[in-house]
Length: 307
Figure 1 (cartoon, rainbow, N blue to C red):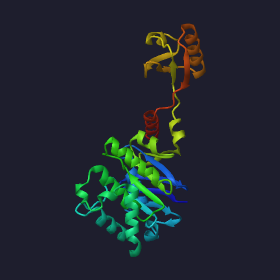
Figure 2 (tube, rainbow, N blue to C red):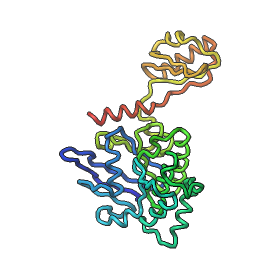
Figure 3 (cartoon, helix red, strand yellow):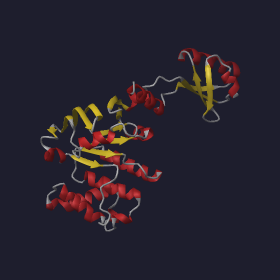
């Protein structure tokens, strides 16, 4: 078991930030930790990384109790907090050597470890540049480099793509995916599309409690859909679709594809749309149930947690 938490709970003054967080992760890959701002994600991650002592419960990293054996457990963890812990007056080389020493890497192996991580994170050509002179995207790459320099089993990343431009986000995602081929990455975000792009499994925290824990597919399918997607060669006017019994709303996604919101059963509305297509010569090419939109799933789970 790479990561296990048992009834993890933490209280700030009189209120619980998280309560009874139970997580079990056995395999490499990217696990999304999803939740709105203030849901308890960062508190959970800080406890898992040993930078905050929990009020109750236990954390195990590769079977090692983090509270009882912090040094041994932390050797297995790499952490990239929301703000990367960079010393901007150092060069990339100076900073990564320093991080390697902090991680107790043998002196004879530090140079090789630094070179390897620079190549992996795409910063080798800036080795002698001061970190303060790097762009935001390259600073984030250096932040990722320090988190993996000691080859940990578990890499924890708190909103690692926050504040990056689209091109920088694509590069950061690529690096994270490569890391996850060998290690477990616990990836925190409140951006649903980001989690959907990267993660194979998702854990959602709302109000300090886990409200969902399953595969990304199960998360996407959580909300029962009340819409179908239709693709046609000769689509009708929007009003013709809206006049079909059971149709509530019509959105044309493109010239030949429409999203049809309906009430009643999927089977009934599908039969009606197919019949209307045949009668109207729309040349229907495809009709499928629209999967639950991530935002709607998020809203449903958030509403459930507040009940």
